[in-house]
Length: 255
Ligand SMILES: Nc1ncnc2c1ncn2[C@@H]1O[C@H](COP(=O)(O)OP(=O)(O)OP(=O)(O)O)[C@@H](O)[C@H]1O
Image (cartoon, rainbow, N blue to C red; front, side, top):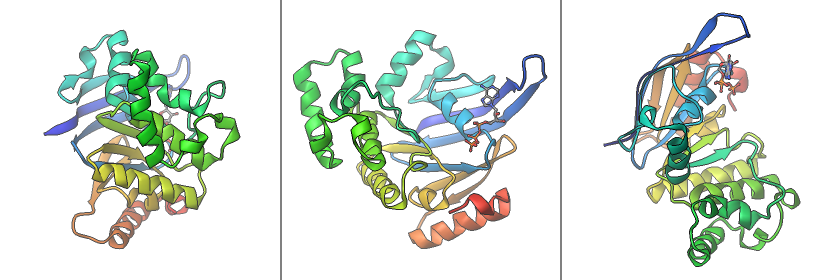
């Protein structure tokens, strides 16, 4: 049963105030099952973030069907979309999106505070999660006082604290060095093994090789996919790299 279901999603933007509309997403259909870890790759400007924003309920498709857990997102009012987002989705972005005026603990708890969860229950969720992400000692510090890798782990904790059905990650390793990228990708793999569904946009073939399936976007459509299946991670990475180089012609951005 698909957790995420998209059918014939199209999205157009006016590229300038009086200019014509440009169709960035031409026809995207995809489905992601519960427990899957899917990566999305594509050239710069191919529409990856646009697609992720539509799935995130931050933007709306021009036409097409999108369902998360059978809920048709087009049927939700603006208000209900915000509630749906908070309850069902977790976000990890390249630039962490943490608030510098809140300490790390309050950043992580923010989604629960907005849902008026009692303090004791928040604490019961926070402490084991912080331990598993190795950030227990950082909770009372502020985002600007910790390293990029630590900030991304705090952001991951904020994404996971609500037990979201789906984690949406947009270039989550984009601002991290290779050591911290590996740590974050290992963490994603670990939570995926525990059943967490993840959809991750990335420019990095190495990052995509941590997923089970990699989709390639070009010209507003998903035109290719590589599945790990029984392959080793090395073989899977090689296939992703070859596909990216051959099909996207973006050899320079594949790491
Ligand atoms: N709000 C908007 N208004 C107008 N055009 C937009 C808007 N958002 C995105 N676009 C255009 O849509 C296209 C796709 O942008 P998008 O950010 O989705 O690409 P991307 O694949 O995520 O790129 P990158 O890998 O560089 O982040 C670009 O040409 C961009 O200029």
